[in-house]
Amino acid sequence: MAFNKIQVANPVVEMDGDEMTRVFWKSIKDKLIFPFVDLDIKYFDLGLPYRDETDDKVTVEAAEATLKYNVAIKCATITPDEARVKEFGLKAMWKSPNGTIRNILNGTVFREPIICKNIPRLVPGWTKPICIGRHAFGDQYRATDAVIKGPGKLKLVFEGKEEQVELEVFNFTGAGGVALSMYNTDESIHAFAEASMATAYEKKWPLYLSTKNTILKKYDGRFKDIFQEVYEAGWKTKFEAAGIWYEHRLIDDMVAYALKSEGGYVWACKNYDGDVQSDFLAQGFGSLGLMTSVLVCPDGKTIEAEAAHGTVTRHYRVHQKGGETSTNSIASIFAWTRGLAHRFV
Image (cartoon, rainbow, N blue to C red; front, top):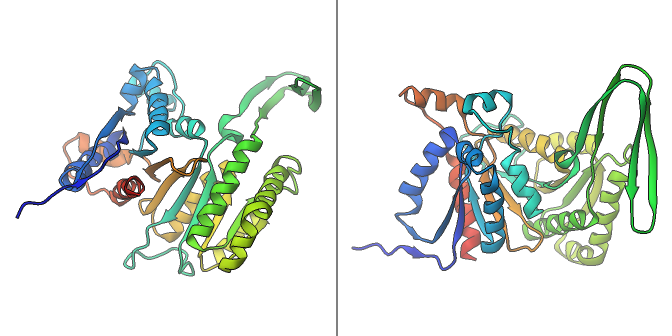
């Protein structure tokens, strides 16, 4: 009896990657996807050699294609450091492709554990999943930093159309030090809040936002204020009817609560906090290789699905020498299933 493939009307953007994940990425496609699904793939090679060849333009093109076609499925990629620049003979130390893509898509990364009964949890009290939403724009990931040499005054200047603001940050009197300036936008924070509320409401789970607004009173306070405004304006009635709630917590209090909770909620984090805490959650539930990762854009229809782990370099070194490896490909398989599920809607 002939098997009829599932027909997919609209294209999917595929972003290929590096090292061991690139090896089994092809195997996933050949064994689990293409035999069963007939779809138009817009392919972009985000492997480090081709990113270098194109001066990283291919990464921007892949992100722009995602905005056009609304669904992207991404393999893990290398973010080069000094050692990688030397290893690959790169023209430059190219930026994180994930960072570039996230800044163009301006979305929120939602990560959730893939729970298996036979995988022991390091935090046994977590009997329900925890979905962590990482605001994937701005803050440290688009910051400007500098090494300060010698004494002098560090100032922060804003030149607006109607006013100019000048703030004295610090007066260096010794040998110098370091400085950092970062930012975010009301529009991006608003989109982050909407995406977080929508995800919590869809799952019928409570939502927590964590910040350090007691220290960063204006910066983190802006996140807290916008989330509250969005909640009051469009979600409070829906949440109450569903028996769920929204609450702001300090990041240190939230981490302590997370460890003693049973799970079953959405945790909205600023960019850096989400970067750190998503790995903490993944390992607590069992493994970084058992975590789904989906970037949801403000338009609600554009997503990028990926694995939440790296390129598994250690296994790739064995593979290069002809050795046998056994690498967990579940998160990459789930990247395909999450992307295709959204495409089928």
